[in-house]
Length: 200
Image (cartoon, rainbow, N blue to C red; front, side, top):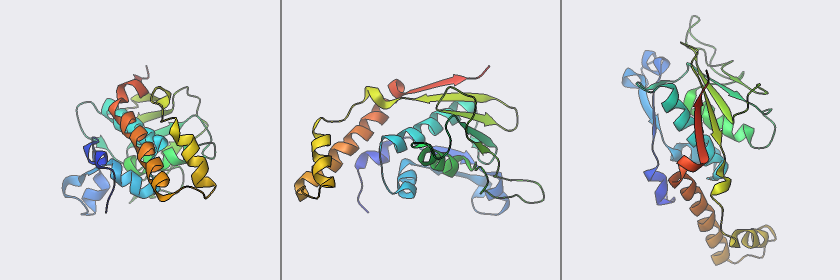
């Protein structure tokens, strides 16, 4: 399996999942996600996917500054409807990592470990996403804006050729490389594209 090498340099997200411990999936319930996991799930890598991974990575670090994030005990709120723009794509990544779902998630065991009803949309927030700890109510707002990391000016012309079915194999390859270069630079400049604020 070949993919851009920078995927392997991106910080992973380690969680502890009480359900996986009870059911014997991972010792102590501890495991981790990486950006490649998100790419596999989505089937592509793009600035939106990078943002979804980054807001989750940075949001969970702020939400759990001294311990591992507890998967299945994190609420996620989005300002937009699920059907609007790229909200659904972002929510899928957040769900994969945090376990939170709107309605489709695990219903629980004897009243414990439920994953449904932990994700909501049309929330009254100004941020890209709000993460909330179920145990203590601590909330973190995360803002994502990749506009400061632009793509190559050649990308638009190459995309038009690809969509028109007239791009050469070399042009298609170049477009993919330029596309992934922007994704790479978003991760390299995460401090300029991500802002995390604790809700008081």
